[in-house]
Length: 267
Image (cartoon, rainbow, N blue to C red; front, side, top):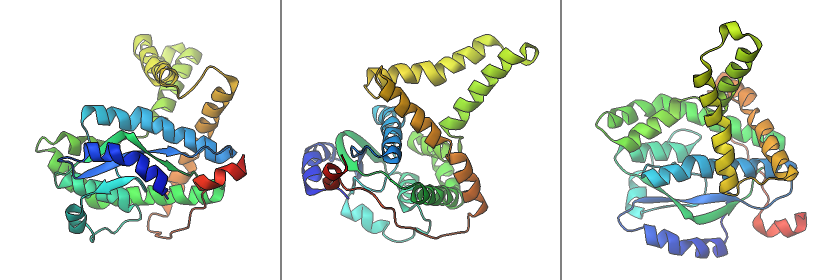
């Protein structure tokens, strides 16, 4: 939960962006936490902010509402206070807003700190719920969003693609496996120009941007943190398979998190 201090710090930026905007989403950043799991998840959150949401901010596209740090005009909220039926009401509300022509504006200069999960079991339950909710949103909300995109709404088109395209983890693994397979069995290799250009796009370009934006550093600790994030990302495969097999389950589990005021006791 955001603290009063963090709200005061981000409020000037929110106020500066609020003119003629209906819904704003502040950048959610992880609380500094040395726990192995929480720190790995926190790195992933920073990476998503850098590679996913900030480019959309620069392009004027819409973001999605997250569990905290979002602001909406009361009149707009009143229109959508009822009608949600999935376990991921934040994503569902984002889709409903964009479908009706509204935008969720990302504000990277306003930041809200959030604790990350510190227990593997509870974090997997949480992510399973996210996948189930995502599936339900696609089933119930995707076609109206596509119809909106067909009118020329680029925000709706971007969000519609986001809901159904494979994750970056899948595309990166696919490109890497293709490159390695081509080295092992040259007879079945795809054209090298295409494969290695894709490899550069999936590995070298993100690494350079991450270094330039200080997401990663040229140190063993930073490299190990990136590796930890990669390992945690692989959990999405069993989580996704389990969630799709239990898509009708609507159980909700509380998520234990560390609060910002508790970090002094953790270190």
